Image (tube, rainbow, N blue to C red; front, side, top):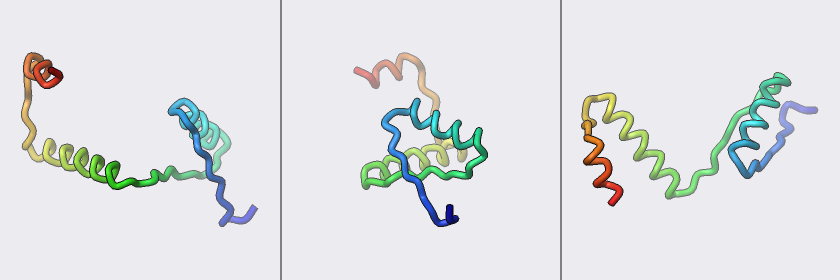
Length: 73
């Protein structure tokens, strides 16, 4: 097999993804994961990363269980 050969798999569940990752690791096959970006996914990831950065910079705030339950109503 050439170094440029590529295998693309499309696991349709997290269990199958985990099984593929374990198989590759167990057989010492180098691999990388790539996520196909969609505009909404990219925005969501950026929002989460910004939240993590804000938390590390002390910009987060603690809320009580009661406040959290109010968010779900």
